[in-house]
Image (cartoon, each protein chain N blue to C red):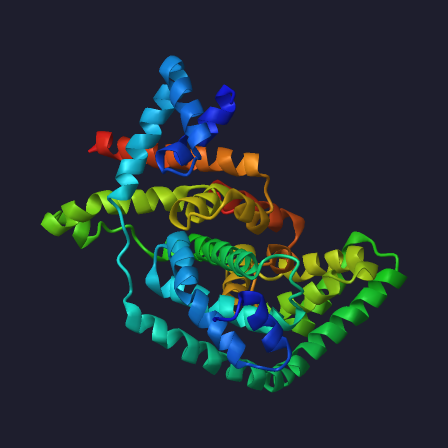
Length: 184
Length: 211
């Protein structure tokens, strides 16, 4: 029978480094997707995954099991993802004068592939534009289908507040896409 | 369930995450509440859009690369503990200079002209260091509560001579790109700026909803 997450942590704390490797294998895909949904970019998501596991490795000896292992991992993932987004926004802001806003080739030549991807792009853009809390709730609830009780522990928010955030997030995504369609 | 509760349960109703009892509650509520019915229609339309938008997986081969790279970076981290020691001495001089001037500032009652002279002297003392090093030095002093108010004076003195926006930009970018800084610490970054510059920066960042 496979060891539980907590057993792996305890084993690591006793000096078995292989248990960390098992945790990585167990959660790498989940963490990648959470990160990807936050940043909508493979390279940045990959950086986040690396950063999360580095943080986990360094903190694993101090993990006392006050929360579940996976809620702890997800909390770190959400924090690193939000931190990455903030850094990127500041970088973009500071470098904004370095570039002229040339229209991209893609937007000049809306070929068939572009048309097919337009809807997906709009939804991704809508998700990226959500306020941080709403985005986090939306990703964890809609994509990861986590119970509200677990999201509550990860984001330190009441269940009632999470439900309200989820509602407003989905509404905003729909409104954004509809507005974009009307504008075209 | 009251209207507010129903409203916030609609997404779970749509995605099939409610138990049978709650499903009945929502269904019967929707029959006579036009407001919730409107919310439902909007959420359902958004949900349908989301269903059509699935991300493409990076492929299973990608996941095999994660662990070896994490392990490589962990080895690098252990080595960098030693490398960090080579960097630290570069910060000692600006820290010592700043600390000396702090002592002077604490001990001497300054009028505005002598304050400028002190700041000027301080600038010359630290001008050969990068913006990052200066920010780091001031940051370290700033976090020491005993010298907080005085380090603000020193920070203003440095910042006055470092041409506002250019300084903000370089310092921020260097901080952001530094591997050593895991979390963005705006307080630490702006501690080397005077109040006016901080206000300008905050207002510019706020305009773009960064803060």
